[in-house]
Length: 580
Image 1 (cartoon, rainbow, N blue to C red):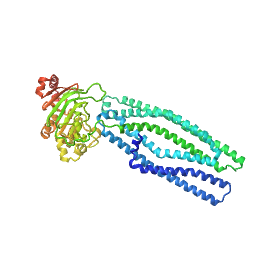
Image 2: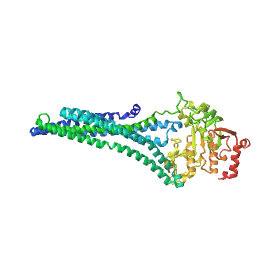
Image 3: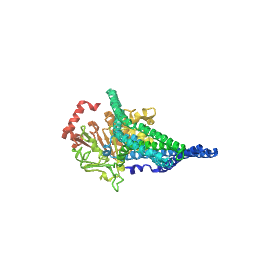
Image 4: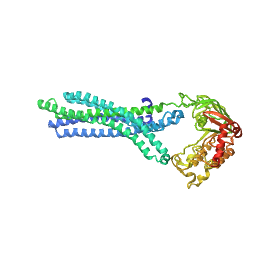
Protein backbone atom coordinates (compact mmCIF):
# COMPACT_ATOMS: atom_id res chain seq x y z
CA UNK A 1 0.00 0.00 0.00
CA UNK A 2 2.75 2.46 0.98
CA UNK A 3 4.68 1.65 -2.19
CA UNK A 4 1.64 2.40 -4.34
CA UNK A 5 0.87 5.66 -2.54
CA UNK A 6 4.52 6.71 -2.76
CA UNK A 7 4.26 6.53 -6.56
CA UNK A 8 2.04 9.62 -6.39
CA UNK A 9 4.97 11.78 -5.23
CA UNK A 10 6.41 11.70 -8.76
CA UNK A 11 7.54 15.18 -9.87
CA UNK A 12 7.45 16.45 -6.27
CA UNK A 13 10.42 14.36 -5.10
CA UNK A 14 12.74 17.40 -5.17
CA UNK A 15 10.66 19.58 -2.78
CA UNK A 16 10.23 16.51 -0.56
CA UNK A 17 13.99 15.95 -0.44
CA UNK A 18 14.65 19.66 0.16
CA UNK A 19 12.18 19.63 3.05
CA UNK A 20 14.12 16.81 4.72
CA UNK A 21 17.43 18.65 4.30
CA UNK A 22 16.18 21.94 5.75
CA UNK A 23 14.37 20.19 8.62
CA UNK A 24 17.63 18.46 9.60
CA UNK A 25 19.41 21.81 9.46
CA UNK A 26 16.75 23.49 11.59
CA UNK A 27 16.89 20.69 14.20
CA UNK A 28 20.68 20.81 14.52
CA UNK A 29 20.70 24.59 14.88
CA UNK A 30 17.96 24.60 17.53
CA UNK A 31 19.92 22.09 19.59
CA UNK A 32 23.12 24.15 19.35
CA UNK A 33 21.46 27.43 20.43
CA UNK A 34 20.76 26.38 24.09
CA UNK A 35 24.37 25.17 24.40
CA UNK A 36 25.77 28.52 23.29
CA UNK A 37 23.21 30.34 25.45
CA UNK A 38 24.42 28.41 28.50
CA UNK A 39 28.01 29.23 27.63
CA UNK A 40 27.18 32.93 27.36
CA UNK A 41 25.37 32.89 30.74
CA UNK A 42 28.37 31.23 32.39
CA UNK A 43 30.77 33.77 30.85
CA UNK A 44 28.60 36.64 32.05
CA UNK A 45 28.60 35.08 35.52
CA UNK A 46 32.38 34.73 35.35
CA UNK A 47 32.78 38.41 34.39
CA UNK A 48 33.82 38.01 30.75
CA UNK A 49 34.63 40.96 28.51
CA UNK A 50 31.75 42.66 26.68
CA UNK A 51 33.40 41.95 23.33
CA UNK A 52 33.39 38.18 23.97
CA UNK A 53 29.74 38.27 25.07
CA UNK A 54 28.80 40.27 21.95
CA UNK A 55 30.63 37.72 19.79
CA UNK A 56 28.61 34.84 21.24
CA UNK A 57 25.43 36.93 20.98
CA UNK A 58 26.12 37.60 17.29
CA UNK A 59 26.59 33.89 16.68
CA UNK A 60 23.26 33.21 18.45
CA UNK A 61 21.48 35.82 16.31
CA UNK A 62 23.00 34.32 13.16
CA UNK A 63 21.92 30.80 14.20
CA UNK A 64 18.42 32.05 15.00
CA UNK A 65 18.14 33.63 11.55
CA UNK A 66 19.44 30.46 9.92
CA UNK A 67 16.95 28.37 11.91
CA UNK A 68 14.14 30.69 10.86
CA UNK A 69 15.19 30.47 7.21
CA UNK A 70 15.46 26.68 7.33
CA UNK A 71 12.03 26.42 8.96
CA UNK A 72 10.45 28.85 6.49
CA UNK A 73 11.91 27.13 3.44
CA UNK A 74 10.94 23.72 4.82
CA UNK A 75 7.39 24.99 5.32
CA UNK A 76 7.23 26.21 1.71
CA UNK A 77 8.70 23.04 0.19
CA UNK A 78 6.60 20.72 2.38
CA UNK A 79 3.41 22.56 1.41
CA UNK A 80 4.37 22.28 -2.26
CA UNK A 81 5.26 18.59 -1.92
CA UNK A 82 2.15 17.61 0.06
CA UNK A 83 -0.24 19.60 -2.15
CA UNK A 84 1.33 18.09 -5.27
CA UNK A 85 1.17 14.62 -3.75
CA UNK A 86 -2.53 15.12 -2.99
CA UNK A 87 -3.19 16.40 -6.52
CA UNK A 88 -1.51 13.35 -8.05
CA UNK A 89 -3.34 11.06 -5.65
CA UNK A 90 -6.72 12.54 -6.57
CA UNK A 91 -5.85 12.32 -10.28
CA UNK A 92 -4.84 8.68 -9.93
CA UNK A 93 -8.02 7.82 -8.02
CA UNK A 94 -10.25 9.66 -10.50
CA UNK A 95 -8.41 8.13 -13.45
CA UNK A 96 -8.77 4.68 -11.93
CA UNK A 97 -12.50 5.16 -11.43
CA UNK A 98 -12.81 6.06 -15.13
CA UNK A 99 -11.46 2.60 -16.03
CA UNK A 100 -14.02 0.80 -13.89
CA UNK A 101 -16.75 -1.31 -15.37
CA UNK A 102 -20.27 -1.02 -14.01
CA UNK A 103 -19.55 -4.15 -11.99
CA UNK A 104 -16.62 -2.41 -10.27
CA UNK A 105 -18.64 0.75 -9.62
CA UNK A 106 -21.41 -1.34 -8.08
CA UNK A 107 -18.96 -2.31 -5.31
CA UNK A 108 -18.57 1.30 -4.15
CA UNK A 109 -21.33 3.77 -3.44
CA UNK A 110 -21.11 7.22 -5.02
CA UNK A 111 -20.98 8.87 -1.60
CA UNK A 112 -18.10 6.61 -0.57
CA UNK A 113 -16.13 7.51 -3.70
CA UNK A 114 -16.69 11.23 -3.00
CA UNK A 115 -15.46 10.80 0.60
CA UNK A 116 -12.34 8.99 -0.57
CA UNK A 117 -11.57 11.70 -3.12
CA UNK A 118 -12.02 14.50 -0.58
CA UNK A 119 -11.80 13.71 3.15
CA UNK A 120 -9.56 10.65 2.83
CA UNK A 121 -7.13 12.34 0.44
CA UNK A 122 -6.96 15.39 2.75
CA UNK A 123 -6.09 13.14 5.70
CA UNK A 124 -3.35 11.40 3.73
CA UNK A 125 -2.05 14.76 2.49
CA UNK A 126 -1.83 16.06 6.06
CA UNK A 127 -0.03 12.91 7.16
CA UNK A 128 2.44 13.20 4.29
CA UNK A 129 3.27 16.77 5.27
CA UNK A 130 3.68 15.71 8.90
CA UNK A 131 5.95 12.82 7.87
CA UNK A 132 8.37 14.96 5.87
CA UNK A 133 8.36 17.74 8.46
CA UNK A 134 7.39 16.83 12.02
CA UNK A 135 8.09 13.08 11.76
CA UNK A 136 11.68 13.96 10.82
CA UNK A 137 12.09 16.95 13.10
CA UNK A 138 10.65 15.42 16.30
CA UNK A 139 12.92 12.31 16.45
CA UNK A 140 15.98 14.39 15.56
CA UNK A 141 15.17 16.99 18.20
CA UNK A 142 14.52 14.22 20.72
CA UNK A 143 17.86 12.47 20.06
CA UNK A 144 19.95 15.64 19.81
CA UNK A 145 18.37 17.16 22.93
CA UNK A 146 18.98 14.05 25.04
CA UNK A 147 22.62 13.91 23.92
CA UNK A 148 23.17 17.60 24.64
CA UNK A 149 21.32 17.35 27.96
CA UNK A 150 23.59 14.56 29.17
CA UNK A 151 26.70 16.34 27.92
CA UNK A 152 25.70 19.52 29.67
CA UNK A 153 23.79 18.44 32.76
CA UNK A 154 25.20 15.05 33.65
CA UNK A 155 23.26 13.77 36.69
CA UNK A 156 20.47 16.30 36.17
CA UNK A 157 19.50 14.46 32.99
CA UNK A 158 18.35 11.46 35.08
CA UNK A 159 14.94 13.13 35.33
CA UNK A 160 14.35 12.07 31.73
CA UNK A 161 14.76 8.42 32.74
CA UNK A 162 11.55 8.84 34.75
CA UNK A 163 9.66 11.24 32.52
CA UNK A 164 10.20 9.72 29.06
CA UNK A 165 8.79 6.22 29.82
CA UNK A 166 5.90 7.83 31.72
CA UNK A 167 5.07 10.20 28.87
CA UNK A 168 5.47 7.52 26.16
CA UNK A 169 3.22 5.07 28.03
CA UNK A 170 0.60 7.77 28.61
CA UNK A 171 0.60 8.95 25.01
CA UNK A 172 0.32 5.40 23.65
CA UNK A 173 -2.58 4.68 25.98
CA UNK A 174 -4.39 7.86 24.95
CA UNK A 175 -3.84 7.17 21.26
CA UNK A 176 -5.00 3.54 21.49
CA UNK A 177 -8.23 4.64 23.19
CA UNK A 178 -8.93 7.37 20.63
CA UNK A 179 -8.29 5.34 17.47
CA UNK A 180 -11.52 3.24 17.38
CA UNK A 181 -13.59 6.45 17.45
CA UNK A 182 -11.53 8.04 14.68
CA UNK A 183 -11.84 4.91 12.50
CA UNK A 184 -15.62 4.79 12.79
CA UNK A 185 -15.91 8.41 11.64
CA UNK A 186 -14.96 7.63 8.03
CA UNK A 187 -17.78 5.13 7.52
CA UNK A 188 -20.19 7.72 8.93
CA UNK A 189 -18.80 10.34 6.55
CA UNK A 190 -19.95 8.07 3.72
CA UNK A 191 -23.49 8.07 5.09
CA UNK A 192 -23.42 11.85 5.59
CA UNK A 193 -22.34 12.42 1.98
CA UNK A 194 -24.95 9.94 0.82
CA UNK A 195 -27.65 11.95 2.61
CA UNK A 196 -26.42 15.18 0.97
CA UNK A 197 -26.21 13.61 -2.49
CA UNK A 198 -29.67 12.06 -2.32
CA UNK A 199 -31.25 15.29 -1.07
CA UNK A 200 -29.67 17.49 -3.74
CA UNK A 201 -30.39 15.11 -6.62
CA UNK A 202 -33.98 14.54 -5.51
CA UNK A 203 -34.75 18.10 -4.40
CA UNK A 204 -37.89 18.30 -6.54
CA UNK A 205 -39.21 15.06 -5.04
CA UNK A 206 -38.41 16.24 -1.52
CA UNK A 207 -40.30 19.50 -2.05
CA UNK A 208 -43.09 17.76 -3.91
CA UNK A 209 -43.80 15.53 -0.91
CA UNK A 210 -43.00 18.25 1.68
CA UNK A 211 -40.28 16.08 3.20
CA UNK A 212 -37.85 18.88 4.01
CA UNK A 213 -38.18 18.35 7.76
CA UNK A 214 -37.63 14.62 7.40
CA UNK A 215 -34.50 15.18 5.29
CA UNK A 216 -33.17 17.74 7.77
CA UNK A 217 -33.76 15.30 10.60
CA UNK A 218 -31.99 12.50 8.69
CA UNK A 219 -29.03 14.76 7.92
CA UNK A 220 -28.97 16.00 11.51
CA UNK A 221 -28.72 12.44 12.81
CA UNK A 222 -25.82 11.66 10.49
CA UNK A 223 -24.03 14.87 11.50
CA UNK A 224 -24.73 14.19 15.19
CA UNK A 225 -23.21 10.70 14.93
CA UNK A 226 -20.02 12.18 13.50
CA UNK A 227 -19.99 14.87 16.21
CA UNK A 228 -20.34 12.27 18.97
CA UNK A 229 -17.48 10.16 17.61
CA UNK A 230 -15.22 13.18 17.18
CA UNK A 231 -16.14 14.49 20.63
CA UNK A 232 -15.30 11.14 22.19
CA UNK A 233 -11.98 10.96 20.38
CA UNK A 234 -11.07 14.58 21.09
CA UNK A 235 -11.86 14.20 24.80
CA UNK A 236 -9.39 11.35 24.99
CA UNK A 237 -6.76 13.16 22.92
CA UNK A 238 -7.23 16.25 25.12
CA UNK A 239 -5.55 14.28 27.95
CA UNK A 240 -2.29 14.84 26.05
CA UNK A 241 -2.14 18.40 27.32
CA UNK A 242 -2.36 17.80 31.11
CA UNK A 243 0.04 14.85 30.80
CA UNK A 244 2.48 17.06 28.92
CA UNK A 245 2.11 19.89 31.44
CA UNK A 246 2.74 17.53 34.33
CA UNK A 247 5.94 16.17 32.78
CA UNK A 248 7.15 19.64 31.80
CA UNK A 249 6.63 21.18 35.25
CA UNK A 250 8.04 18.10 36.98
CA UNK A 251 11.18 18.46 34.86
CA UNK A 252 11.44 22.19 35.64
CA UNK A 253 11.02 21.60 39.36
CA UNK A 254 13.53 18.74 39.38
CA UNK A 255 16.17 20.68 37.46
CA UNK A 256 15.73 23.87 39.48
CA UNK A 257 15.70 22.16 42.88
CA UNK A 258 18.53 19.69 42.25
CA UNK A 259 20.53 22.13 40.12
CA UNK A 260 20.26 24.94 42.69
CA UNK A 261 21.34 22.58 45.45
CA UNK A 262 24.39 21.48 43.41
CA UNK A 263 25.36 25.08 42.69
CA UNK A 264 25.10 26.02 46.35
CA UNK A 265 26.92 22.98 47.73
CA UNK A 266 29.65 22.89 45.07
CA UNK A 267 29.80 26.67 44.60
CA UNK A 268 29.35 26.30 40.82
CA UNK A 269 32.36 24.00 40.37
CA UNK A 270 30.36 21.11 38.79
CA UNK A 271 27.41 22.92 37.30
CA UNK A 272 26.54 26.54 36.65
CA UNK A 273 23.50 28.73 36.05
CA UNK A 274 24.04 28.41 32.30
CA UNK A 275 23.79 24.62 32.45
CA UNK A 276 20.54 24.81 34.39
CA UNK A 277 19.15 27.23 31.80
CA UNK A 278 20.21 24.88 29.00
CA UNK A 279 18.75 21.86 30.80
CA UNK A 280 15.39 23.58 31.09
CA UNK A 281 15.44 24.33 27.36
CA UNK A 282 16.52 20.83 26.39
CA UNK A 283 13.89 19.35 28.68
CA UNK A 284 11.25 21.43 26.95
CA UNK A 285 12.53 20.32 23.54
CA UNK A 286 12.52 16.63 24.55
CA UNK A 287 9.00 16.76 25.91
CA UNK A 288 7.71 18.78 22.96
CA UNK A 289 9.30 16.25 20.60
CA UNK A 290 7.43 13.45 22.34
CA UNK A 291 4.24 15.49 22.18
CA UNK A 292 4.71 16.01 18.45
CA UNK A 293 5.39 12.30 18.00
CA UNK A 294 2.12 11.51 19.77
CA UNK A 295 0.27 13.90 17.43
CA UNK A 296 1.92 12.19 14.48
CA UNK A 297 0.89 8.81 15.84
CA UNK A 298 -2.73 9.92 16.15
CA UNK A 299 -2.74 11.48 12.68
CA UNK A 300 -1.02 8.52 11.04
CA UNK A 301 -3.44 6.09 12.67
CA UNK A 302 -6.36 8.18 11.42
CA UNK A 303 -4.92 8.46 7.94
CA UNK A 304 -4.02 4.76 7.85
CA UNK A 305 -7.73 4.04 7.56
CA UNK A 306 -8.01 6.70 4.84
CA UNK A 307 -4.96 5.29 3.04
CA UNK A 308 -6.48 1.82 3.10
CA UNK A 309 -9.75 3.12 1.64
CA UNK A 310 -7.79 4.94 -1.10
CA UNK A 311 -5.70 1.86 -1.80
CA UNK A 312 -8.87 -0.19 -2.22
CA UNK A 313 -9.76 2.10 -5.13
CA UNK A 314 -6.29 2.10 -6.69
CA UNK A 315 -5.79 -1.67 -6.53
CA UNK A 316 -9.25 -2.51 -7.85
CA UNK A 317 -8.85 -3.87 -11.35
CA UNK A 318 -11.55 -3.44 -13.94
CA UNK A 319 -13.47 -6.59 -14.70
CA UNK A 320 -13.43 -5.47 -18.34
CA UNK A 321 -10.03 -5.40 -20.01
CA UNK A 322 -8.75 -5.19 -23.55
CA UNK A 323 -7.47 -8.42 -25.14
CA UNK A 324 -3.78 -8.71 -25.95
CA UNK A 325 -4.23 -7.74 -29.60
CA UNK A 326 -7.57 -5.88 -29.74
CA UNK A 327 -9.49 -5.25 -32.92
CA UNK A 328 -9.69 -1.51 -33.62
CA UNK A 329 -12.30 -1.39 -36.35
CA UNK A 330 -16.00 -2.32 -36.24
CA UNK A 331 -17.09 -3.65 -39.69
CA UNK A 332 -20.82 -2.89 -39.38
CA UNK A 333 -23.71 -2.55 -36.97
CA UNK A 334 -24.98 -6.14 -36.96
CA UNK A 335 -25.62 -7.61 -33.49
CA UNK A 336 -25.84 -11.27 -32.52
CA UNK A 337 -26.68 -12.84 -29.16
CA UNK A 338 -25.77 -16.53 -29.07
CA UNK A 339 -26.92 -18.44 -26.00
CA UNK A 340 -26.44 -15.41 -23.74
CA UNK A 341 -27.18 -15.59 -20.03
CA UNK A 342 -26.17 -12.92 -17.54
CA UNK A 343 -26.26 -12.14 -13.84
CA UNK A 344 -24.90 -9.05 -12.15
CA UNK A 345 -22.98 -10.93 -9.47
CA UNK A 346 -21.15 -14.22 -9.82
CA UNK A 347 -22.63 -15.25 -6.48
CA UNK A 348 -26.21 -14.36 -7.47
CA UNK A 349 -28.66 -17.25 -7.62
CA UNK A 350 -30.88 -15.84 -10.37
CA UNK A 351 -29.92 -14.83 -13.92
CA UNK A 352 -31.06 -11.38 -15.10
CA UNK A 353 -31.00 -12.69 -18.68
CA UNK A 354 -31.46 -16.32 -19.70
CA UNK A 355 -30.83 -18.12 -23.00
CA UNK A 356 -30.97 -15.09 -25.30
CA UNK A 357 -30.62 -15.86 -29.00
CA UNK A 358 -31.08 -12.83 -31.22
CA UNK A 359 -29.75 -11.80 -34.63
CA UNK A 360 -29.97 -8.20 -35.87
CA UNK A 361 -28.73 -7.22 -39.30
CA UNK A 362 -26.91 -3.92 -39.84
CA UNK A 363 -29.31 -1.04 -40.52
CA UNK A 364 -32.34 -2.73 -38.96
CA UNK A 365 -34.69 -0.93 -36.61
CA UNK A 366 -35.45 -3.14 -33.62
CA UNK A 367 -38.03 -2.39 -30.95
CA UNK A 368 -37.95 -3.91 -27.47
CA UNK A 369 -41.03 -4.02 -25.26
CA UNK A 370 -41.53 -5.52 -21.84
CA UNK A 371 -42.68 -4.83 -18.35
CA UNK A 372 -40.62 -3.29 -15.57
CA UNK A 373 -37.90 -5.71 -14.50
CA UNK A 374 -37.93 -7.71 -17.73
CA UNK A 375 -34.21 -6.84 -18.27
CA UNK A 376 -34.63 -4.76 -21.42
CA UNK A 377 -31.87 -2.33 -20.39
CA UNK A 378 -29.63 -5.17 -19.24
CA UNK A 379 -29.87 -6.72 -22.71
CA UNK A 380 -28.65 -3.61 -24.57
CA UNK A 381 -25.92 -2.87 -22.02
CA UNK A 382 -24.12 -6.02 -23.16
CA UNK A 383 -23.72 -4.61 -26.69
CA UNK A 384 -21.18 -1.82 -25.84
CA UNK A 385 -19.70 -4.21 -23.25
CA UNK A 386 -20.75 -2.26 -20.19
CA UNK A 387 -20.99 -5.74 -18.70
CA UNK A 388 -19.60 -9.06 -19.91
CA UNK A 389 -21.89 -12.00 -20.45
CA UNK A 390 -21.91 -14.74 -17.83
CA UNK A 391 -22.60 -17.34 -20.50
CA UNK A 392 -22.72 -17.16 -24.29
CA UNK A 393 -21.41 -14.60 -26.75
CA UNK A 394 -22.40 -11.14 -27.98
CA UNK A 395 -21.10 -10.24 -31.42
CA UNK A 396 -21.01 -6.84 -33.12
CA UNK A 397 -20.11 -6.84 -36.80
CA UNK A 398 -19.72 -10.60 -36.53
CA UNK A 399 -16.93 -10.31 -33.94
CA UNK A 400 -17.09 -11.16 -30.23
CA UNK A 401 -17.26 -7.84 -28.35
CA UNK A 402 -14.53 -9.10 -26.01
CA UNK A 403 -12.07 -9.07 -28.92
CA UNK A 404 -12.53 -5.35 -29.60
CA UNK A 405 -10.61 -2.46 -28.15
CA UNK A 406 -13.17 -1.19 -25.62
CA UNK A 407 -12.89 2.44 -26.70
CA UNK A 408 -13.30 1.49 -30.37
CA UNK A 409 -16.40 -0.57 -29.61
CA UNK A 410 -18.03 2.15 -27.54
CA UNK A 411 -17.24 4.81 -30.13
CA UNK A 412 -19.31 2.73 -32.56
CA UNK A 413 -22.25 2.40 -30.18
CA UNK A 414 -24.27 5.39 -28.96
CA UNK A 415 -26.66 4.96 -26.03
CA UNK A 416 -29.36 7.40 -25.01
CA UNK A 417 -30.85 6.59 -21.63
CA UNK A 418 -34.19 7.62 -20.21
CA UNK A 419 -32.38 9.59 -17.50
CA UNK A 420 -29.42 10.79 -19.50
CA UNK A 421 -27.54 13.69 -17.97
CA UNK A 422 -26.44 17.01 -19.36
CA UNK A 423 -23.33 18.62 -17.93
CA UNK A 424 -22.64 22.15 -16.79
CA UNK A 425 -21.78 24.26 -19.81
CA UNK A 426 -23.41 25.54 -22.98
CA UNK A 427 -25.64 23.49 -25.26
CA UNK A 428 -22.83 23.46 -27.81
CA UNK A 429 -20.38 22.06 -25.27
CA UNK A 430 -22.85 19.34 -24.29
CA UNK A 431 -23.53 18.37 -27.89
CA UNK A 432 -19.82 18.15 -28.67
CA UNK A 433 -19.50 15.28 -26.21
CA UNK A 434 -20.70 13.30 -29.23
CA UNK A 435 -18.08 14.82 -31.53
CA UNK A 436 -15.68 17.42 -30.18
CA UNK A 437 -14.84 18.59 -33.71
CA UNK A 438 -18.43 19.01 -34.89
CA UNK A 439 -19.17 22.25 -36.74
CA UNK A 440 -22.08 24.51 -35.87
CA UNK A 441 -23.90 23.23 -38.97
CA UNK A 442 -23.47 19.62 -37.83
CA UNK A 443 -24.77 20.51 -34.38
CA UNK A 444 -27.86 22.11 -35.88
CA UNK A 445 -28.43 19.14 -38.21
CA UNK A 446 -28.26 16.67 -35.33
CA UNK A 447 -30.70 18.81 -33.35
CA UNK A 448 -33.10 18.96 -36.31
CA UNK A 449 -33.08 15.15 -36.48
CA UNK A 450 -33.75 14.99 -32.74
CA UNK A 451 -36.47 17.66 -32.97
CA UNK A 452 -34.42 19.92 -30.69
CA UNK A 453 -33.38 22.72 -33.05
CA UNK A 454 -36.61 24.70 -32.73
CA UNK A 455 -36.64 24.97 -28.94
CA UNK A 456 -32.88 25.61 -28.80
CA UNK A 457 -33.22 28.58 -31.14
CA UNK A 458 -36.08 29.89 -29.01
CA UNK A 459 -33.64 30.52 -26.17
CA UNK A 460 -32.16 34.07 -26.11
CA UNK A 461 -28.61 32.69 -26.47
CA UNK A 462 -29.53 29.81 -28.78
CA UNK A 463 -26.84 27.15 -28.87
CA UNK A 464 -24.73 29.20 -26.43
CA UNK A 465 -27.42 28.87 -23.75
CA UNK A 466 -25.86 27.65 -20.53
CA UNK A 467 -27.09 24.36 -19.10
CA UNK A 468 -27.06 24.07 -15.32
CA UNK A 469 -25.66 21.00 -13.59
CA UNK A 470 -27.72 17.95 -14.52
CA UNK A 471 -29.76 19.96 -17.02
CA UNK A 472 -32.12 21.31 -14.37
CA UNK A 473 -33.03 24.40 -16.42
CA UNK A 474 -34.54 22.44 -19.33
CA UNK A 475 -37.57 20.15 -19.34
CA UNK A 476 -37.39 16.36 -19.39
CA UNK A 477 -38.40 16.19 -23.05
CA UNK A 478 -35.89 18.87 -24.06
CA UNK A 479 -33.15 17.09 -22.17
CA UNK A 480 -33.94 13.79 -23.91
CA UNK A 481 -33.90 15.40 -27.36
CA UNK A 482 -30.54 17.08 -26.67
CA UNK A 483 -29.15 13.73 -25.53
CA UNK A 484 -30.40 12.10 -28.74
CA UNK A 485 -28.73 14.83 -30.79
CA UNK A 486 -25.52 14.32 -28.83
CA UNK A 487 -25.61 10.60 -29.63
CA UNK A 488 -26.25 11.23 -33.33
CA UNK A 489 -23.12 13.37 -33.56
CA UNK A 490 -21.06 10.25 -32.84
CA UNK A 491 -22.31 8.89 -36.19
CA UNK A 492 -22.54 5.47 -34.58
CA UNK A 493 -22.97 2.12 -36.28
CA UNK A 494 -25.44 1.18 -33.54
CA UNK A 495 -27.85 3.62 -31.87
CA UNK A 496 -29.60 2.46 -28.70
CA UNK A 497 -32.53 4.46 -27.33
CA UNK A 498 -33.37 3.15 -23.87
CA UNK A 499 -36.87 4.56 -23.32
CA UNK A 500 -35.33 7.90 -24.27
CA UNK A 501 -38.44 9.40 -25.85
CA UNK A 502 -40.69 8.75 -22.86
CA UNK A 503 -40.87 12.48 -22.04
CA UNK A 504 -41.86 13.64 -25.54
CA UNK A 505 -45.29 13.48 -27.16
CA UNK A 506 -46.14 10.84 -29.74
CA UNK A 507 -46.02 13.33 -32.63
CA UNK A 508 -42.48 14.42 -31.79
CA UNK A 509 -41.53 10.78 -31.22
CA UNK A 510 -42.77 9.94 -34.71
CA UNK A 511 -40.80 12.82 -36.28
CA UNK A 512 -37.64 11.63 -34.52
CA UNK A 513 -38.10 8.08 -35.88
CA UNK A 514 -38.78 9.43 -39.39
CA UNK A 515 -35.53 11.42 -39.17
CA UNK A 516 -33.63 8.28 -38.20
CA UNK A 517 -35.05 6.31 -41.11
CA UNK A 518 -34.19 9.05 -43.61
CA UNK A 519 -30.80 10.28 -42.46
CA UNK A 520 -29.14 7.25 -40.79
CA UNK A 521 -30.48 4.26 -42.75
CA UNK A 522 -27.28 2.22 -42.35
CA UNK A 523 -27.20 2.66 -38.56
CA UNK A 524 -28.69 -0.18 -36.53
CA UNK A 525 -31.37 1.32 -34.31
CA UNK A 526 -32.49 -0.45 -31.13
CA UNK A 527 -35.42 1.26 -29.41
CA UNK A 528 -36.61 0.31 -25.95
CA UNK A 529 -40.04 1.76 -25.37
CA UNK A 530 -43.18 1.54 -23.27
CA UNK A 531 -45.41 2.79 -26.10
CA UNK A 532 -46.28 0.41 -28.91
CA UNK A 533 -46.46 3.39 -31.29
CA UNK A 534 -42.72 3.96 -30.80
CA UNK A 535 -41.83 0.52 -32.18
CA UNK A 536 -44.73 -0.72 -34.30
CA UNK A 537 -43.02 0.26 -37.57
CA UNK A 538 -39.75 -1.50 -36.59
CA UNK A 539 -38.26 -4.26 -38.74
CA UNK A 540 -38.27 -6.50 -35.68
CA UNK A 541 -40.03 -6.20 -32.33
CA UNK A 542 -38.85 -8.19 -29.32
CA UNK A 543 -41.09 -8.82 -26.33
CA UNK A 544 -39.18 -9.43 -23.07
CA UNK A 545 -40.53 -11.18 -19.99
CA UNK A 546 -38.57 -12.22 -16.88
CA UNK A 547 -35.22 -11.89 -18.60
CA UNK A 548 -36.18 -13.97 -21.62
CA UNK A 549 -37.42 -13.28 -25.13
CA UNK A 550 -41.11 -14.10 -24.97
CA UNK A 551 -41.85 -13.34 -28.62
CA UNK A 552 -40.37 -11.63 -31.64
CA UNK A 553 -41.60 -10.52 -35.04
CA UNK A 554 -43.27 -7.58 -36.75
CA UNK A 555 -46.24 -5.66 -35.42
CA UNK A 556 -48.91 -7.64 -37.27
CA UNK A 557 -47.31 -10.97 -36.45
CA UNK A 558 -47.12 -10.20 -32.73
CA UNK A 559 -50.73 -9.04 -32.62
CA UNK A 560 -51.63 -12.57 -33.74
CA UNK A 561 -49.02 -14.64 -31.87
CA UNK A 562 -48.15 -12.77 -28.61
CA UNK A 563 -50.72 -12.37 -25.86
CA UNK A 564 -48.46 -9.93 -23.99
CA UNK A 565 -47.96 -7.67 -27.01
CA UNK A 566 -51.63 -7.76 -27.97
CA UNK A 567 -52.69 -6.93 -24.40
CA UNK A 568 -50.30 -3.96 -24.19
CA UNK A 569 -51.43 -2.70 -27.59
CA UNK A 570 -55.13 -2.93 -26.75
CA UNK A 571 -54.67 -1.28 -23.35
CA UNK A 572 -52.84 1.65 -24.89
CA UNK A 573 -55.27 2.05 -27.75
CA UNK A 574 -58.35 1.78 -25.53
CA UNK A 575 -56.75 3.93 -22.82
CA UNK A 576 -55.94 6.67 -25.30
CA UNK A 577 -52.22 6.75 -24.50
CA UNK A 578 -51.51 7.00 -28.23
CA UNK A 579 -53.06 10.45 -28.26
CA UNK A 580 -51.25 11.82 -25.22
